[in-house]
Length: 361
Image (tube, rainbow, N blue to C red; front, side, top):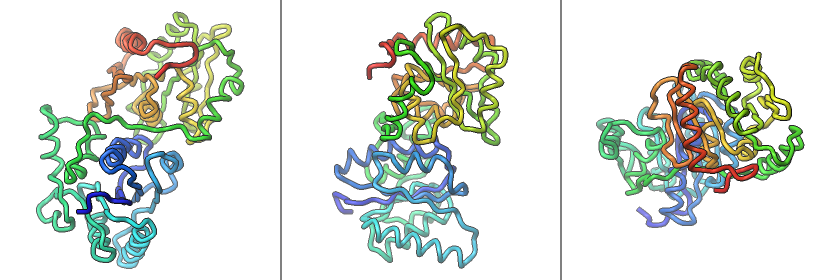
């Protein structure tokens, strides 16, 4: 294997959710640290082409390029078209290596194998099942063996799963967090956020994300009565404004949260669902002193930006946690769990004291 690759294709295929894609950024950072100057090209096969997350990831500072293709049916003509498309991407990027991050399925295995024989690239993948390793020159052990090696409990964050493939290169996570930088659009939004929402310069801004408005995600949504009670306490004790984030289709759930909420004079609560493009969302979150969220896309964005974050779970979900100094997780499915939520917030505030309108990091 070449010691210093110039261009690496990262081949992935799964959900197009913001968190699902952003989780991979720790692995991208590890590759940059291991091979200084390398250019990373993410090739993403998905059943959800055109998702909003694509615009956010396309501008990620750790990626040189980002290409998306819809997964195709198992018909010969579709397979031939996908093969031609992928080999053209390999040639256009000048790829030295292709790393297949997927542990199962034949699509990515076959594409990786064809890139080796058609374009002469080095190939890396996961020998998840007997025989799968023949598709790759450099093979990582199965996910099960990797998890057993890195975790005594047998549970890992989703972020760790990208390091299964990288273990074939001798690269481990070593505690790297996910990461995201503000783009110019995000910075512009953050710098204009007070004027946009009519906020005075001295007032602190706390972000709240109910989220979980997509199909099948409702069971992750926090208890609205719990959030109302906490919002009331935090505004009374700290005199802060609140901004509710979300996609346009989540505006209604934010309005439900605010139903009957007692608004304090001079302490606005802003329903900003749909008020930002996905590329501006990091600017809004970065303007906040703290971000309190369900297990949804904005939660992962806040963590990646290193904004002090509290995530509310309705049940234990170790795989969805981020173990970073600026993150606190709390299981709080009911109003009676308000003390646990307040304790998590207080602990985070002690570790990251608020300074004016932001946090020094």
